[in-house]
Image (cartoon, rainbow, N blue to C red; front, side, top):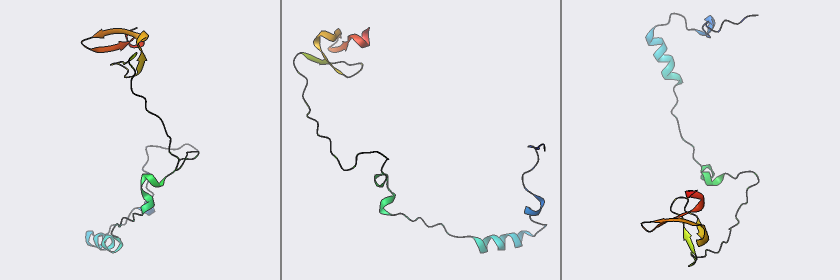
Length: 100
């Protein structure tokens, strides 16, 4: 059976009969409910755990400052060995990968 996608989707029995405006407003006010937001402590983003995620584990990483023979590229912001230095302009250093 072919379907007419341009036809209205509301059936005749779903449409209200010729009701007066007062009757419609009275019916609406009788069924109107106030919306209450039910927020629990577990509803925050911190309450959700992704499947397979590590929970309650801290990663300990030792942060080592930039050494004398290293520089930070001003394009990719990675720390490279000085052998990777391609360009130094106005005190800004750039690596071979960014300048290549």
